Length: 532
Image 1 (cartoon, rainbow, N blue to C red):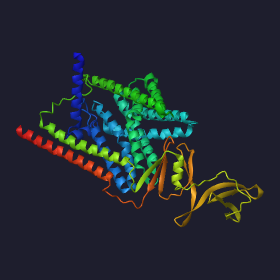
Image 2 (cartoon, helix red, strand yellow):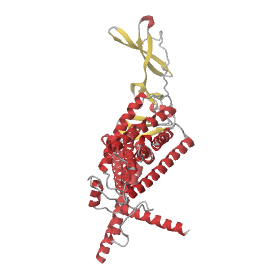
Image 3 (cartoon, rainbow, N blue to C red):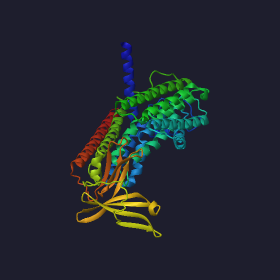
């Protein structure tokens, strides 16, 4: 029991020290040392500083993401859409890669080389992936999942192997980090694509969908592409003869298997169980590989591999004025981060504004909404009626190429336009379009049919687009719902509305609280310094 208590006290001490050292204020020299580390070829030695830069980068990305979301929410300016998507794709991926880099204890690896690998390796993997996709077909959802897993993991593996071979790297931890860099680059491209495609609604982005995909892709960044590719880099760098190593092929097959399970077209409890398994497997491997590789790196450098994963030579900050300085700095940073999270949550709620969203879980309700409640029907199987007469026709060089027939059904006049192929008795008529004539508010207008498709290209619904305020729509991945984006040109912001009052009060309260705490800790730090 005493051994357990001793271990618990040591672990808790490490956690407390990690928290203090991570969130304390760092000097300009520390930023300079971090950014220039490993740039000079004569850099030697080992550093055991706690990771700290990654959390600042993550907080900065979240805050910037929230700022641009608020700009888009209050101005509906589509020019801010690209930068919002870019920041969303970087916010989780890059800080995670930075964390892995900070764990590496030697000074012979530069951040520049890691980012060059991210850019070139990630791009190369994307290019090879698209080439392989074009030559490897998939007949169904399961084969599509298997194709995606095999093609993407093999492409990323090729990129990281070429990178490590060119560097002549035999450091397992470096292999892990460089593999993570390739996977991170690939993940950034894919995440940006998913966020844009699933939230792009013609003129404006669907902010709610953007945030949903951002959170979903971001939270899974820690256990998907980055870790899968890192395992292959680790296996390649840890073997003397990598192409004959069982470990390399085992990691590649394992990455393909986890990727396949992640993409598998399951649903319900089976899907949840598979995702949980993939997360736990990736996390277990990543933590184990990092710990063992870091220990081996320290041992090779002649340093003692202490039981603690991290170590610091700095003394306690509690009895020093720096304690209060760090507490004040943390108050400001944490306040800004919480304000950003609240802003993101606010933007995810579809309040009615200039652009607003409306979601339908039933296809019939969606069609009824798009047709403004009119019970309209269309018959795309209707054959051309030889005796029905011709309402209008179009000709090219004296040859009739299309004809329109008028049909009255249920009190509505429908117009079926047929394209003519051939001539005489051998002519074949194909329906080109169907429209209906409606009298709305004393104005008679013609409305045509439109179609929306599922992600796999199959038809979801066909309807008459009577509403004129719809700017775009998006069908969910499982086709269980469709989201319509509406535009209200007469909308005016009324900042006395509850949603604005609550937002501004929450942001103002948090800003005042964090600023007040900063001033309080600053005063305490000055008094501590004067007392000394």
